[in-house]
Image (cartoon, rainbow, N blue to C red; front, side, top):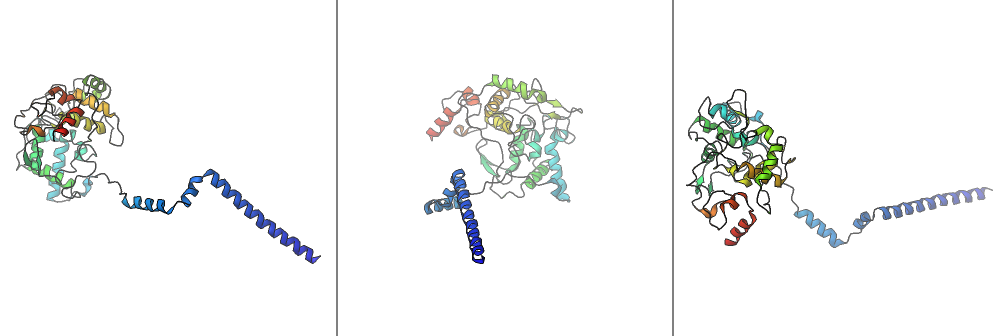
Length: 347
């Protein structure tokens, strides 16, 4: 009797082991059917593993977007006071230097941050991330090696349609101090990611001012006015929303008067609430909007001394003469790809 009990116990244990083995085999087969890729990875040939390792070694991490320092980090000393004043001038240019400015009257009533958003700190918002790090530098428009002072002066004479501050003035010194502080973590010679304006791909047609007019009415008119006149603050000494054309807007020598620059600006920043991470316009809409806005009347600036070497003119610079046979209209509105192709071939 005892032998029979031992035999039954042994058979019971063997049966349990057999059931466990069968269960494992079934689970394996189910996994193999449902997720074959996993097992292919397990049995990957050595040469594929080596190729994968090589790829991993070559890949580089994506560059981080530039980030402006926190204004709370501005030092609490005399230099810090100068930096804060510089920032104040960028944000509230008109109150200090506009037609009713309390320091000087040398600009059109717009603020520097109307073009250089968030006091020159917004990503892809024409920020100041690479001013001190890249100047002085040669610029083809003037044909000279320009300083930061020259760059700021150009903004006053073109975008603010005014006159430049004295290079030795406290105001010029303060604006330079602020820009330098913004770039305190930017190595000399480097242009951080997120700097400047996006370079949009050329359309396969000319930019269309008529379509741009419809886009303006739908998405821009409520802030910038039916006639592009902008909206003044209650004190009438600065703009809540800047004029986009007319006597108080940027003149035709400003950088934004090129449709590629204007399109690259608005695609990441307009209408209100847009950013490079949350675009509210398509590229085509940005091109057409730029064509409409820059086809409206605005102040003229004598540019006879610009582009001594006309072969260096940007292809969308809207004033003749040119080093090629394309018309002034095509240089202003496109299509630009034929001009670009001809320019490359000429080299």
